Image (cartoon, rainbow, N blue to C red; front, side):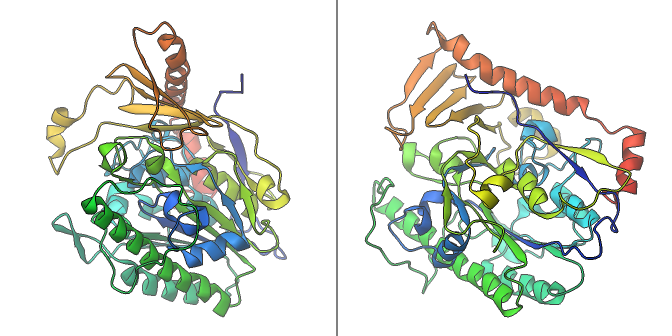
Length: 462
C-alpha cells in the first residue's frame, strides 16, 4: 500500500530582510489565480475551443500539471489553503467569510516572501477574498480590493478589465527595483452568471473533445458564456505577460497560474460548485513558468494538489538563501514540486485529498448559524485520489462512491457502497483517520508567547 500519511515538508526560513546575500537576486513571483476555472475548458488541457491562447503559450514555455486538484471548492478556503499549504480543517477556514485564526502557528506564502525583502501586492476581484473576511490583507504591503461591480445585489466583484490596469500600474512601479516582488492577481470572471462577452467568442479547433456535451440549449448557452468569460480573462492575462516582456523581466520572473476550483456545468444534474467533489469541480489548471529554471514544454501527469503551490514557490525562491541564526520551522502539508520542475523528476505518487463542508445559505446573520451549520464531526463530503482510483464519501448518506477515472473519466458509472456492504467500514476508515489526524494536529498547533516573539523577530508578524 502506498504511503498514506500526510506529506510534511519543513522549510526553515531566514530571520530578517538581510538574510539574502547582497549578490543573490531572488526571482520575482507573479501568481495568477482564476476563480471557478475547470481545467478541461482550457485549450492547453485538450478543450475543443481555443479559449486560452495566452495561457497555452505560458504552458508551452513552462511546465503544466495535467492532474492538479483543489482541496476544497470554495474561493476563500481554497486560497487560504493555497497560501498556507494546509487543509481547511488544519488552518480553520472551511467556508467563505472565515479568516485564519490568530492563534494558529501557521505562516503564509506572502509572509515568508515579505520577510526576505519581497515587495508584496495583491489585487482581488470578489468578496470572499476581502481583507476583512480573510485577513489576507495583513500579509501584503498593498491589498487592492476596490469592487465596483454588482454581484448578488451588492458591489462585491470586478471584471478583468477593472483589475488588470491596476495590477499593471503596480507591476510597472515595482519592476526592476533592487527588491524582488510578489504580485498576486485574482480574476473572478468565469464565475457564474457566465456573462457572454461581445468579441470574445473562442473559435473551435480540430481537436478531440474529451468533455461531455451540454444536455440542452439552456446549458449550451451557459457553456458559451462560460467559455467567453475564459477567453476574455485570458486576454487580460496576456497583458500581464506582455508587461513582463516590455519591462525586460520575463527571465527573472516566475509565473504561477492556478485556479481555486472548477465548476459543474450540468454534469450530474448540478450547476455550480461548493458542495460536490466531481472532477469538473476539483480538477484545476496549474502551470509554472520560470525561464532557465523550470523545464519548458513539460507536462507532469502525476496527481498534485493546490497545497503544493506554496512549498514549491518557497523552494524555487528563498530556500537556498543563507539562513540566519534564528529560524522557525514552517510545516507544510503539501510538498515541493521543485525537483520535477527543474530536473524533470516524476513526483512520487501519493494520495490527493479533498473536502467540502456544510455551508451558509444566503446572508443569514452569524447568530442564526445553528440553522445552517450541521454537526461537523466529519465533512459534508470528502475523499481521495490514488492514481486513477477515486473515492467520494458522503457520511450523512452513508454512501461511498468509487470511480475508475481511466475507464470512466466522466464519473457516470460509480461503484456505490452502502454501510450494509461488508467492506464499507474498512474502505472509509482511512478517510476518517486522515481527517482526524489533520484536524487534531491543527488544534494542537497554537501559538505560544515565545512562538509569537520568534515570528515577530523573523518579520512574519508586522
